[in-house]
Structure formats: structure tokens, C-alpha cells
Amino acid sequence: MDRITLGNDEFEGHNNAYVLIDGSGEDVALVDTGIATPETREELREGLADRGYSFADIDDIVLTHYHVDHAGLAGEIQAAGDATVYIHEADAPIVSGDEDAIEAMHTRRREYLESWGVPAEAQEELLAFLEAASHVSGEPADVTPIDDGDILEVGGHRLETVHSPGHTAGLSAFEVIDGSAAGEGTREAFVGDAILPVYTPNVGGADVRVERPLETYMGTLEGLAGRGYDRVWPGHRDPIDEPDTRAETILDHHRERTDRVLEVLEAHGPADVWTVSAHLFGDLSGIHILHGPGEAYAHLEHLDREGAIALEDGEYRLVDT
Image (tube, rainbow, N blue to C red):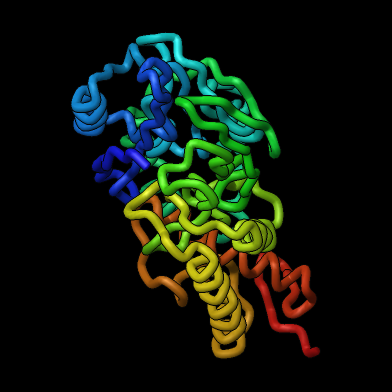
């Protein structure tokens, strides 16, 4: 698969934009675009120029999810050549710049930060970080919403949309039905941040709109592992040649973290989300002021629904069972 590796100092780094081109060279598509910084914009321009193309030559853009390190340049590329931008309907309002949807997400985030017990100074630091990074979100795009099972014909490939929520509400993988670079009989997919080769994707804080974030994400991992892919192409870093094994490793990581959350409550007594996240991750800064307690909340919320712990007056306590 033809991959342009992009830098990204703001978030996880090492983003990928995948270039899909049909046999005639006239139908060109991108899977994800990278973040809207001058450096990344130039890297993407140069990568396309090396292949004989410019932003104006892009016919279709397929976005795995709304996060700015994946969708930041979509609006600008679309403006250059009127590309069609596809994204799952749950994430579409964010990329299209729907003010009501964006404000609703921000309101929910503020409510969670309060309920999680995040101190006022930490909230102020987080909001300052997000405000300073707001320029990297890029221009809104006129999007074409898609749903699970939809087939896209882009860049000489047929891609099946596989809704894979957890990291975001609308994150989708795209299974290559034909046009695989690896040849006949090989099953491949673009998976965005659903499965990453190094990090475990954040759940709980990465998209506060996701209900039952841990359960939702674990269901996604189990579903992707069951599809029998030989190779997947993630949104960051290198391809994953044993995706089922990697998915199981991430599942094990979350099982171990669930045990660790229970150990924290057993050792330290009832605690709010912020306190549990401090025991798990230590001091937090920048975006991790959101991601740390978000991850802790995902596990606490799951344990609460399972009856292992109970929430009382903003604190979680162990239940005798």
C-alpha cells in the first residue's frame, strides 16, 4: 500500500496518509490527510508531488475519524480540487464544522471534567492547550456521511466501511475488497486508530460522546480480530502483519488495567476519577489531562455497570461481592 509518512508534534506523531490510484492514474484518493500544520502540509504536498499529483488532483478523501491529526487537511484539499470527503455519520458533523455538534461535545467535556473531579487549575491548563492547538484543526469540509457496510469505490479500490467505535464514536476501518497491494486472497484494511502497533488507543477521553467507552472499544477489537485480516494499515506508524495478535494484546492491556483500577480502590479506598487516574498515570499535562482521567473513567464506568464497584457522591468504592 502506498503510504506517505507525516510528522506530527502536537499529538502521537508519525501519521500516515495512504494514496490510492487506479490503473489509469486518473482516479486518486487519500485515506486520512494529516494535521493542518505548515510542516505536515508541505510533507503531504511533497509526497503527492513525488507521485505526480497535487492537492487539486485528489478525487476522494476517506477519513477514518474526525481527530485533527487525521482530518485536519481534508477541507483544504477539498477546496483545491472539489474532492468528495467520506466519513462515518457519527463523526461527520465535527469535520463539517457543525457549530451545534461541536459545542455539544465541548459542553459534555466540561461536564465530565467537573464530575471526574479534575482540579480547576488542571482544567485551565487543558483548555489553554486545546485553544493553542485549535489552529491545527484546519478548514471544515463538505462531507458525505457513510455508515457501516457502505462500499466506497475510490482510487481504483473498493472499500467496505467497518464501523469501529471506541476511540471516537464514528471511527471506521475500511476493508479492501479488491485492489489489494498484497495480491489475491490477502485480506487487508485501513484501521485508523482502532488498532495501533505501539500505543494503545485512548478511550474515554479521546471522544467524550462515546457511551460505555471501554465496552464499546473492546467490542470493536473483538470484531476486527474476527474478520481474519492478514495485514492492517494503521493511522500511525508501520503496518501490522498480525492484527489479531495485536488486538488481543490491547485487550489484555485493558483487562490488566481493569485489575489495576480495582487494586487502587482496594489500597486507597473510595476515590474520584481524577484521583484514580493519578494513581494509574502520575502527574498529567497537556492533552493527557483529558486522556488520563478519561481512560480511568472508561474502566470505572465499566466496573460500576458490572456491579464490582459503586458510585456514591462522586467517588467510586468497592462492592462486597
